[in-house]
Image (tube, rainbow, N blue to C red; front, side, top):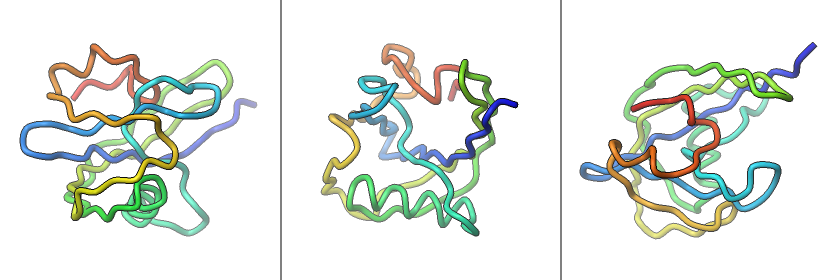
Length: 122
């Protein structure tokens, strides 16, 4: 049976742009993503995304609302990704799990090679 991975992703908005982050490590290093990560035992989506963004960037976010859940079959796992619209409460980010971040217009996102979101159109 294929492994299912359940994750959260933050669609962080600032003015008319959204944040994407370049993965630093692992099988998908070098690809861009909406930041986030795996749920921990007993967490709600809002709790998980706030914790993940704080761990990855040392910033706090406000979760505006749940956007959608995306499911996608990869070669080695099945992904279930809960997406949340968020805003930053502080601007100074420290990159722990990413090599770069960019603020992009949603219509320009297809220029970036994305992991977790290559099937996801905003």
